Image (cartoon, rainbow, N blue to C red):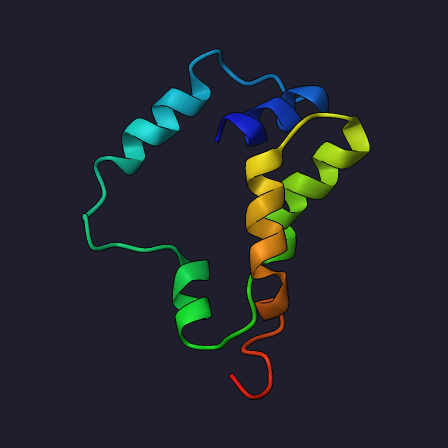
Length: 89
């Protein structure tokens, strides 16, 4: 979340100082067994929203010269699955 906020700010988006903390606090109110749509897609071998989520953050961070190592790691790890389960999986 902090990386996404840093990328947004570097792009000129004015976010409140506590934006990341408020979003994470909201996440804490969600059911413990709830998962993300991308996790659900990964489990079912479907295409991933990676280019628009962690991959998008990482790519924009690269363009802006903002460090986003966590988003880049997620994007790199999940990239083989972006179009669904690799053949033979």
